[in-house]
Length: 355
View 1 (cartoon, helix red, strand yellow):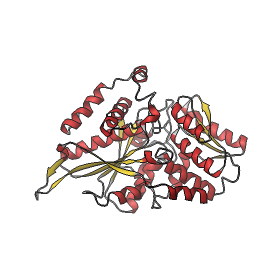
View 2 (tube, one colour):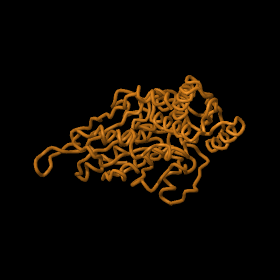
View 3 (cartoon, rainbow, N blue to C red):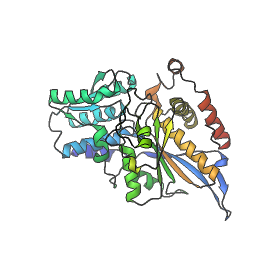
View 4 (cartoon, one colour):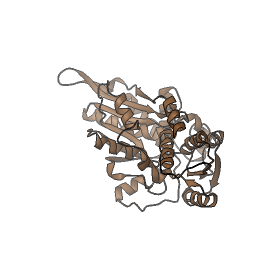
C-alpha cells in the first residue's frame, strides 16, 4: 500500500488539452457576447505506463490488497488485450509479485513488449472469448489471484472523488468558458470509466450528458439498445482497448445517456486525422472517442447550443505503428478510409456532419 501511494504522489495529474476548432465553432449570443463550442482531450497517455489504464490498474491493486486477495508472492493474473496488462505489470513489479497477462495472439507486439519490459509474462489464447476461462484456470493452477478488470473495474474505483478521472476533469475545467461540460464522450472496454463518470455526474448533480462510443463487433451497443445483457459475439474488436465480445459486469448501462456506434474505418481514419491535427500519434480508441465527440460538436453547432465537450486521449499511437498507421495492414484488413476521411474534412471545413 505504501509503495503504491508513494508512486501516486510522484505522478502529476494528466493534462486537459484544448483542441483548436475552426472559426465556425464560435458565434455571438443574443447579448452580443462571443460564445461557441469548445472541445477538450484528457491526455491519459502521460501516465507512467502510457495509458488511461494506469488509473484502473492502481485501483485494482489497492482493492485486491485491501481485500487480502494479494499477499506476498501471490501470482497476479489478468485477462487483457494489452494496455491494462501493461499497467498491471508495472504495479506487480512495484510491489514485487509475479504477473501473467492472458490475451489473444493478435495483440499489438508493442504492447506485449511493454508488458514483458515491466516484468510480466504473456500467455496467449486463440479467441477473445477464451481469456476469462484461461485466466481462471491459471488462478487455480498457480494458487494465484485473477484480478479481473472486467468485473472489478466499476467497484474498485472510488467514483465519489479521491482523484478519479471525473473529479480531475471538472477541476481542470474550472476556469474555462464552459466549466461544466455539456457532453463527456468515452469508449467502453471494461465499462469502468463510463461507470465512474456517470455515477460522478449524478452524485455531483452536474447537468452533463454521458455518451459511450462503441466499435464494430462489440456487444455493448446492441445490448444497450435491446436491454439484453446476455448478448455475446464470436468476433473480437479490431480497435484495441475498447469493445468486448460479451457484456462485462462493470458495464453499467443505466448511467449512460447515449451510445454511438463507430465503424472501424471511421475509428482508424479519425486516429490518423487527429494525429495530424495534434502533431502526435494517438491510438485507435482515441480515434473512436473523437469520431463521437466531433459528431456531437457538429450537432451542437447546428443547434446553436454553446458548451463544451470532453473526451479522452487514451494512449499513444506509437504502440500501433504496425497496424493503424501502416497502409499495408489497412489494405490487408480490407479497409477503405476514404469516406470517413471525407466526412472529417467536411467537418473541419464547415462544421457539418455528413456521415
